[in-house]
Length: 399
Ligand SMILES: Nc1ncnc2c1ncn2[C@@H]1O[C@H](COP(=O)(O)OP(=O)(O)OP(=O)(O)O)[C@@H](O)[C@H]1O
Ligand SMILES: [Mg+2]
Image (cartoon, rainbow, N blue to C red):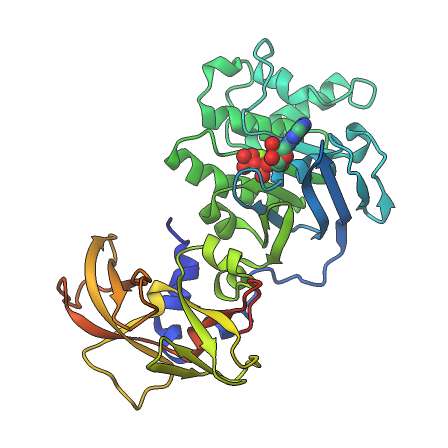
């Protein structure tokens, strides 16, 4: 998984040494936080047969905002999007659009433009006819429809394909047409369900930026379902990370990456190392029997079992222990290496005594190529306190 460079650079580069991931969370990618709420889901619940698929879902979408639903397969992303679109009814809860309760409205009345994964264009209609399909004759004259089609073909940068049929277009072109068709009737909200997942990598990369540009240009609030975290983090104002029918965190990409509020988010987004630890008192943790760390902003219960977490790019390697440094220092042994292009990833084992029978803990560390390490080298890893996360046994962030 490749985390967008704008996220990694701010962490791995100069910022990391002095501040920390946590401080960076104050940077907001979504600047207009106070803008008007255009859509709200209030306590949405949904089951299919006896299986709960969505539990107590609450979220809002602001004017002009781009929100992604991100999560593993089967976590309820599409179901939630379909409930917002009016294609599915919730068992409980409400959908509010511009202060009007639309829970009972049919899809047409909700004024949502929808784009699905599989293009869903009519094969027997031309591109122009496909785009004009939702422009009802009584509301749009033929001249208005033609003008709208021309305008949208220009917007999607395919001005010359009006008379072609879907099977004469590439997947990426078809998905652009599907986008134009969704936007044509001037919807209030754009809903996209995995619009890029059927496309190859390069087309995907270009089209996601194109979708974002168009959405911005039209100032059209949008929700996109995806299971691709790079996609979600790179183009969204906010991301709703979903797991088993709940939203674990609804936040800016920066906060999702740097301040995961749950263990699930920490593990699901990017790469995270986890080490078990136990509280000695309110502020101190012990790792194994010989190593300790003080964490000021915490309030542990003595004896409480927790997990310390940190990202590979936040680890510095030291030839030996440095008692003048704050933060976490532990001995490791390099057991494997991988070439990652700009960086190298070291797979290491923690050289600390754990419970008998317990498998060694693997730590992944990203280093520059200038640093020369060798297999079986024994070194010390160091992580600054402000780059550490701690999760309690329920998986909630303690810091
Ligand atoms: N109409 C339905 N009838 C019965 N079960 C359903 C129905 N629609 C969805 N489900 C179930 O609800 C759960 C959530 O499905 P949903 O399609 O919302 O997941 P998703 O997060 O979009 O997954 P994916 O990433 O695979 O598209 C799944 O277990 C799915 O099998
Ligand atoms: Mg889905």
